Length: 401
Image (cartoon, rainbow, N blue to C red; front, top):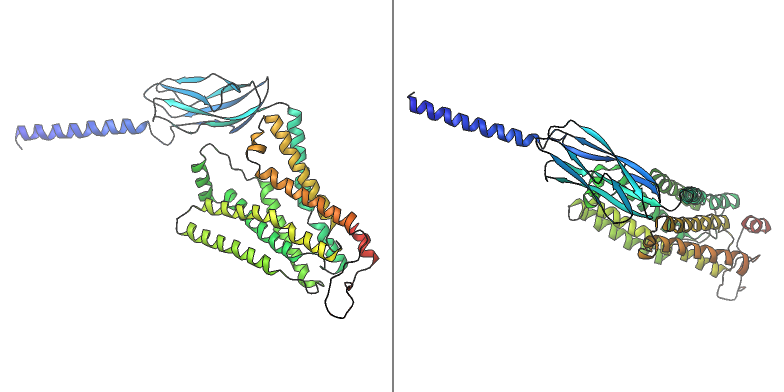
């Protein structure tokens, strides 16, 4: 090889090596370990008091970094320090950051890095809740557990009444059919968002600074509701039911819901919509069922002029659960200065209020309108205009009181 050719070859090799070294140096600032994270993700602060979170920074950088805390809403909290400077080539380190509460409210706090693109800050956020009173916070928590227990055991009075009477006459089958579909869809939503990583990834991509809204008690309640309702359906096959059946109207409604679910399932399987959207559609159907499920039972009581066979214990527990659920929302709205959660998005509060109104109506039916009245059905022809139902006696009435 000639000297000029050897020189040109070495020059090319030096250029390649220089380019490779620059690329490696540039890539070193984007290693998987180069990120910032805040713990905990949920922080509670009392008005006039301070609390703190920890900012963890991982990776070494060949340039100085400035991490600045950004508040979603002004004047609610003060962050100290408001920014942190990380010198070049500094080792991984933890920083304690203080949060002082000025006014009640909720806000997100996240980190912006300068220069941009050197460090991953996707996990560097915290949800801050500033409270009026710590006592109200604990009262709200106790109220939440009470209504959770009340709703969880509200299925058993009806199961007991069916077992004792060996009859489901008086229990509307439309109500049961709507209930089981609603709780199955609610369980699908909870399980999907709590256990399936792909769905969780879709959720956090849509809400980058969100927290998973599903808790373990949500899973327990929905699955327990499915089991209890399924057991009640089994009782409908085992015990006397006379000519009761699911009405044509209820079948049409359930059929429409079934078509919506099937179409949504196909769209999710063909990646037209996300699986998260499919689960949201399931939850919307559950909400719709909650609005209409009590209507068939109330109308059946009206036609029979009796509530015998329909457990008033179930209604009492549902009334307690719904009332305490709304009370908790009011307490939280005051404590967090978050009245928008009730008046700006009234869905949850409205559903609770709707259920309580129906519970009151059922109590009026049981204790006022049809008190001590034997059930009857109107018939046509030359027969007596009233017929008594079988297997009803004075003990049945005392069981319902």
